[in-house]
Image: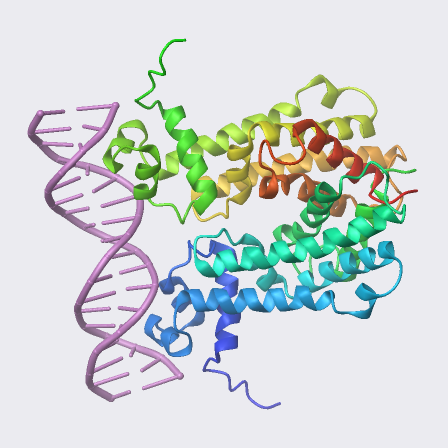
Length: 194
Length: 194
DNA sequence: GTCTATAAGGAGATAGAC
DNA sequence: GTCTATCTCCTTATAGAC
């Protein structure tokens, strides 16, 4: 086997380290000193790879948003009965969230203190609206319980999906597909025996 | 009507102001300068009321935890069939969360950077375990779908409930009781027509 | 591509006057 | 109970050597 070789960073490999630290300590709670220790290089060396702390945040958030919006372009999200598209998107969003866990985690925790954060929040709202439209269609088809409040149900659905970042740890407990399946089943069929 | 009179702070009235700012900017993203501007008094005056920034966090977190654990002592949480107790606790936790919104919001966002935060996270885990036990009982009674994974379902249930703090704003959209009812119905019966 | 050294400013907290 | 002034430390970011 060829030796490890990686002793230097690319912006992307540095990003992976930074995002881990951001998620552990919070973005504001993370100093460049923390990052330098985690990466094993000096503070100033970090500035050789990226312009600022905020650039790291921007890159991470972009990666997460690309993954999520990508789901809406997939065939399963564009063709067929609304309820089926909705369940497809629900499962795929959960999967993307699990595949890109650190990046999506960071995206979901953004609070709006900087321009980058406010822009991220706006794109998230846009995504939510796209899914809310699916719920509305499914309701019109009579495939949702008649008492379902669309905006409220959208919030609760994303609440359930997004909560995954708060507790999922790879290799512990249920796996990726199991979690995605549980989300879809719980959201659409509920916990109780019918 | 007697004049407003409040121009000075008690630890509790100052806490209310601080918690608002913490939730807007994040605890780490909030400086004492931010708090002083929001409260309309100088930085040093804040130290007349509380010993430190962390004491404000501790007080807020305690208030939230007291509310949540209080639910588990209520008659509806201790008597009757497990599934009924579970639904009662679900509704009441949602209600307490809405009644004590800023305090619970802060509790749920804590990341574990300080002793106070780690202690808060431990108490939250304890609370989750108490509810997981209810789910287990309800499953044993045959009142949950047979394929429900207890730890996983507990996470998703809390994920849905806790997400409320991310979007609920009093006086906009659905009201307190409506939200609590939607949570219970969505979690136990699901979104889809059966 | 990495380092040491340091600038410039903001953080939490305290002293002591009023 | 509130203020101004200040301490000390830590923050992000840059300069310039190797």
